[in-house]
Image: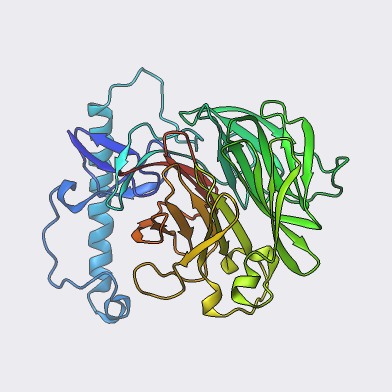
Length: 401
């Protein structure tokens, strides 16, 4: 039995016999190059061998027509052998034929990765049907492991803990708390002991019935809410704009403001900031981690490298320390896009190129994770598994301890 992993979706591909240099993934329908050690015996060597990247040299070679003809003949033979091998090695009912339509189902086998995690499953793809997503994707996981995914079509799709599609509902374009909503939410929130789903959109945090999508209420900031995080007691931390200034508001479980900290980050830097670029996360004991995610907002923004850092606050709102920063050294990053905290107080900072940088709660750099695809949003379940959404896909990563 020959087996290897699909580089697109991470699925484990198994074959008793491989007769071609490429195969089609049964899960994501991608054409996959077979690893060199599993390919069939090579054809006799050509008179002259050159790297595949030297296309200009190959074009100037006078033997090109002969080589092309040989490749066409050999390719036909290989294709014939592959068809014969497939029909002999894989019994099939008479009159049945394989179909390779894209399926929004999770890959079934965890795939080990060299970056400190394994991929439990991946689902999604670009589209508007069930299990497919369009443009920017957001993800949240509730206390029962159910997965909620939104996109720019204002749909919220529900999946069970294994990644199987359950149902979908639409965020209304207008409610009593906002009007003329065109895009999807900036963030989804679930868990924290609440059975509901929360979405940051149109400057408020809206509470929805997670199963039906009924809008149940909304929380407001001073002027406009740009980000929010759920607290262990069922309350919220929200980043609110007040005039041109940043404000951190702690809401109790009843939705009332328990504490406000005016200019909670800009006062530490002694300068005015783009409030829409501020992100916030909370760990399992209520510590607050604020971040100037300048790479997560559209348009041109001026900033100093000193602005790019993680700011830690106690559950009572007292500033503790700052760590991380922009650069190329371990523990540094390019223009960042988001921040998240897991159940053991580790902090995750994301940037472009699928990179997620992990820090301990005291600011010590732990490692860098190379994500399996683009990263636009993160969420953790109660078992501390990491869900990564981006590139119209969602992956569940089982992190190394």
